[in-house]
Image (cartoon, rainbow, N blue to C red; front, side):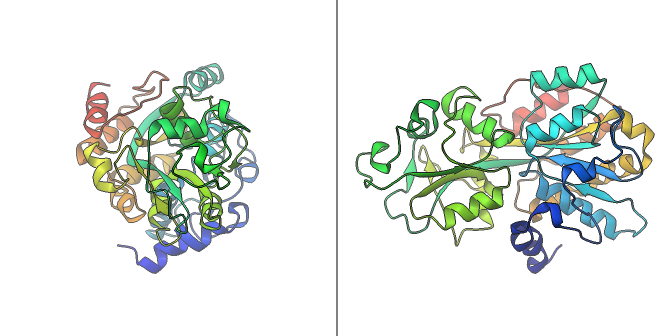
Length: 349
């Protein structure tokens, strides 16, 4: 088990530094353009390094597992873990530039088509469950809860330039400026949240502080008394002294409400997508993914996420061994998907 001090180093102060300049002795993170050097084959990245990109939500899981994997043996291959958002990561993955894409939502239909055209086959592996937290600054003494309808009032495209004060959302709230913070359009969390709230993944206002780096969103809300933002629950859990989570439709986000299915529609599965051809060409990639599925579940909990039932990890391992390519979701968003329903989908794949 990792010490609290070490966990906080990776998840707290280290994230506040730009990912593009973080170079650890193991599990090195590099910016996408560096990680992609010489990596343009549809079969996955070239060389012995394992190249990972994608979701900032899944990043802490994959990075922690990569760190632990390399601690086992200093002869393990270099593992480069970058962050460009789920959508940005899929663009690189479907171009054959990376071996693994971290994803906070299932692959979309357009991304499926892009991968197909490029000849990139992928194995979809669920690795954890997460929730999206809606947060405010601790100095906010008026908002304790919010409804989906109110979130739609705030975040829908028609609110752009129009809904700019807290009292426009709820009349009992003060006439204070409403300052918004959220993921950018390349983020899977952006897609999921926007579809859950407005019914359309593209129906979001754009006049807000956006970033694919959730640590910057945490910092923004924590310094703004009138701020409201959303991002992965684990980032809130690591910063409870700086943030206050709002109950959504009367339910607060927590590991317990995520597992029980009460915190809907903001509980969702997290994935890694693995280049199937690279698995056969790069034995070091196969070994790392096998370790990810057999040992990684303990680190899922360490970095603040909900581990899946052992049965799901076992099924995912079988899918890896059998090279079962494709997706169980058909390119569609999966709102209100419980852990039990995910298990059923995986079992029937």
